[in-house]
Structure formats: C-alpha cells, structure tokens
Picture (cartoon, rainbow, N blue to C red):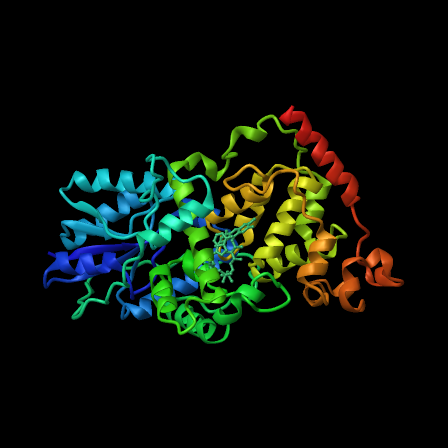
Length: 452
Ligand code: FAD
C-alpha cells in the first residue's frame, strides 16, 4: 500500500531515515510526502520563522519533484484523513521530542489507531535521540561535560542514503500556504540545497578557524546553520560525518564545532526529561527570587535603546536579521535578567518571536544558562559587564557600528563607552538607562536574599 511521510522539522530529502522507512513499507507502491500546517504552531512562530518555513516548503517541494502535499488543520484530523485518502496503513515520521510535539504525536497516533493505521517513528532531529543517554546511575545528565563525553562515546550513525526508485503519490490535493504577514527582514535562502551550500562553504573557509573566531560577532566566524538545523534542512549526522573526514578533524576548530552541536543535543535531552523547563526554572535554587515586571526598561531592551552599545547592537541585529550572534545573545540575556531584573521567560518569548532559528530547547536553556536557573548555570553572581564584553569580543567596535548607525561616527573600540567620547551623542544615541555597577549590586542583593 501507499504510505505517508509526514514531515515536520525534517524538511529535506537526504539523510532522512523516516523516508527510507516509508519507502520500505510502501514496498513498490508510492510515498505521499505531507506537511500539515498547524495553526497553533504557525501563529506562535513569529513572522520571521513563518517566512522561513514558507521558503523551506517551496524548496522541499522542488526536492520532492513537486509531490509535496500541504494541508492546513489539526494533524489529529488531517493526518488520518490523508491516510484514508490513499489507503495507507502506515504514516512515517521522525520522532519528536518537544513537549508540544510529543503530545500532538500521541493524539495523532490514537486517531490513526482507530483506522488501523500505524504511526511509525524512525530517527530524530538529533545525532543521538533525546532520552537515549543516561548516567551510570541511570539518571538524566544535568551537566554538559559528562553528557558530551557520553555523547561522543556513544557515537553517531552514518547518514541515511536516499532510497533508490522513489515513487511519489500524485493524486492528492494540496492546499496553499497561508499568506505571509508583517515586515520580515531579508533572510538567507532556505531549504536543503541552501543549507548544504552554506555548510560546504563553512567546511572550506570557516571550520579550521572556528575555535578562534566563533566568539567574535564582528567576524563571520560561525556556520550560520542554526535555522537550517532548526527546520531539519540538514541533519547533524551529515555534518558530523563530514567533520570526521575533514583533514584537520582532530584540531581545535572542528572539535569545538562538534562540541557546539553537542550543546544542541544536550538541551534537547534536558527538555526531553524535563518538559516543564521550557518555560519554568529548571533548578529550584532561585525560587523566590524577586524579579521586576517588564516595564520601560524591557521596552528599551527590545528596541535596542538601552544606551549600552553592545546590548543595543545585538537587539537591533535580532530585529534586522532575525538572528543574533551567540556571544551577544549571552550578553543581552544577562543584561535583561541581571541589569533589568526581569525574569528570563520574558526575554525568551521576545527571542522566539524574532529568531529565524528559534528552537524551544536551545532558546529556553540558553536563557536559563544566562539567568543562572538552568543546567551548568553560570553562577547567578557572575554578571556580564556589557562594556568589558564589547571591548573583548568586538575590539574595534565594527559590530556595534554595523547595527547602531547613531554611533557610526565614533571610531574604534571607544564606541563601547560613548560617555567617554566627545560628540558621541550628537546623532541621537540614547544615554544609558541604568548604571551597570548599581544594577549589578542590586542583582547580588536579591540573590543573597534568596540564598539566605
Ligand atoms: P555555530 O557557532 O556555527 O554553531 C553550530 C550549531 O551548533 C548551531 O547552528 C547550533 O545548532 C548549535 N549551537 C551552537 N551554540 C549552541 C548553544 N549555545 N546552544 C545550543 N546549540 C548551539 N540556538 C538555536 O538554534 N535556537 C535558539 O532559539 C537559540 N536561542 C538561544 C538563546 C540564548 C539566550 C543563547 C545564549 C543561545 C541561544 N542559541 C540558540 C544558541 C546559539 O546562540 C545559536 O545556535 C547560534 O548563535 C547559531 O549560530 P550558528 O549556526 O552560526 O552557530
């Protein structure tokens, strides 16, 4: 019988074990590639990820030779409907590990079961499926380094080959995607081909130096693959297999890159074990911490008008590009939690509304790390100084000037301290909305109060 391949965040053709499983189960019949546009996810995605998804689905359709079927609705209704239309007895997916995805898939599995159709999960969005690794004592890992050691020791499967002689179901109706809305920044090209092109360029030009350049937002020193990974346009297995045969694979650049992929896997694993950590403190240690309601300071932070150039450049990069450099994500997150004393989920929501790579596991746990409430939490009392961070990681000030035109006339690293530069405020750049040293003291007072 024909089978259904229900695609979600695995929008690619290559290295997709669920496609192999769908093809095998079809046993000479055809596979129907299906994407269900679920309004609950679409509405919550933010205009940037909606635009990315739209472009990614178009690219996917051409990879699938025009056979992709799009339906709008609740998967628990739509997937069984489509399965009935083609008489499928199995629907194939990559297993989902987010709290929403797991609940949804259970609902779909039940609905399919009523018509004797199986939901078969093969593979995940990770090299090692979330929930696979546990400590010697059988408990989940809570700390990154031992996780990453176990993750490397476990090893990763080789990329899955694209099945030969694929046949697609052609007789089923497809719906249009909803119209896009809102102002969206210019985004890089989406889709599997674009992802692989970017990856190959990075393999050639970026990977060897990655350990030295990854922390420098003024240089294009990172892979820029996060949104491609988020939508599954490329699988980390493919990346890891290519790194393994890189001539310098034992050197710092490639090894550091593998470690960054491990962070992505670690956070997915943590979320798997603790679904509540998507929006609540993972560790109870800061329970009772006094936070301020988001107010004017929060608005200034979102708009990139705090008067701290490194923070403002980051927040403006987010709005301008739907992406922010990792180092700067840490700096702006620290500023919101420890200078403005706002609880991390407020910032995490703003990120999710604007990031093209917005991913619940990496985002919430990146925030929890900065807030001191997560795994490996940088201790709460370690407060990032936005000036020192700027001086160190954007030494010539190029990053700030790129995103903050009101400071374009200030030369060199001095741009990080406009209050020391004559004429720095001539073009409308705001004065600092707070005094970092005082804000830091206040954060530490609040911390002492809960610790005591
Ligand atoms: P590279 O440096 O080239 O890294 C390669 C890949 O490794 C990335 O694409 C990503 O998949 C993974 N990776 C790298 N660093 C991390 C990390 N610290 N945690 C988890 N995975 C990592 N990443 C997201 O993909 N989605 C998010 O929503 C997200 N939110 C974040 C929020 C905060 C507060 C912080 C501090 C970090 C967040 N990150 C998030 C992690 C990181 O900032 C981005 O993955 C990275 O900036 C993406 O750029 P890149 O692809 O060029 O990264």
